[in-house]
Picture 1: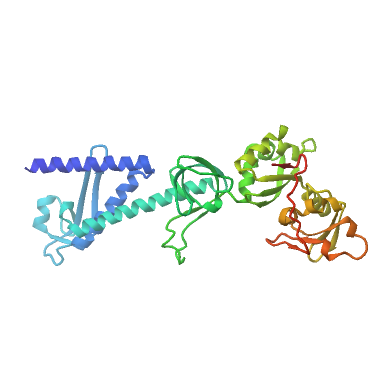
Picture 2: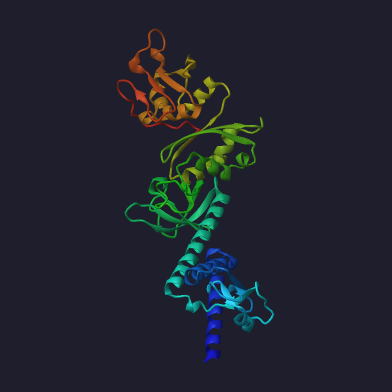
Length: 403
């Protein structure tokens, strides 16, 4: 009967090691870490059951050995049976032990009690969760500020949020970040930008709702567009062409200012590519979002002029140095194009340059300016238009924009 129990115990230990090795393969948690959690759980159970957590282990994965011992001090007369053992009893366990030394007494984990076992399981589960979070955090940290390809595992039918897998880690792509994606389905691959990795703030009021590290996944970030250009344009990747500034209204339109560090390389042409193939790939990834590529200029007046592309500009004059406001004059026929649909072109140009832009038609430039014919745009979210707003759709300039 004793032999059968010993055989059953050895079989249980082998099964435990096999389960740990499977967890290592599927979740990336090392067997050594899992063993530490098991040992810690037994120590906790011993403290609860025996009021003694002085536990020693003998572990040999290769030979299927896992033994636990509680250690007690050898004394002549026992005053604390949980931590002490009489000398003659200790000799039966170890014939070489002496008074004052400690002897290791084998533990039958089945005798630890139901509550102790439940507590032990809780410690093991918590240890696994902690290690999973640590692995997730490390994986996201390595990919922070980069574009990765994720696999869609689930779509929430109510919110539209997508659960995505990045390597061995799980993240959420909110519906608000799914710009340029139509009918996202389970099993789809999608490019996402890991904008930030946040760890729990122990003082946060929201810690119960957002346990563990959280990756901020984005497709609306300006940096998502920047990384796409780095992937598609070798000259940007190797530093020959630099992206100086980006202004974006995700899902609608992006303006990007570039400059070349090599006088023989056309920065705008490099980004557009032969027959527009490079920028076309980016536009496709963004679901048709318009992209205006302009050349960066050190001179603010010239930069504002190019930023208002595809509109033509007659002149750009500093209007107020303190507020960095510039007055831009455009041909009457170009006014609606300069302003853009609902002021978008002017608004993006202001964000791109960091200037306030006061756009006026050429016919109203001389003499007292007519307030009804002006538009003032800055890099804020709002744009103020006087009198009737111009609602005409933008028309892209050849070579600078891609539908």
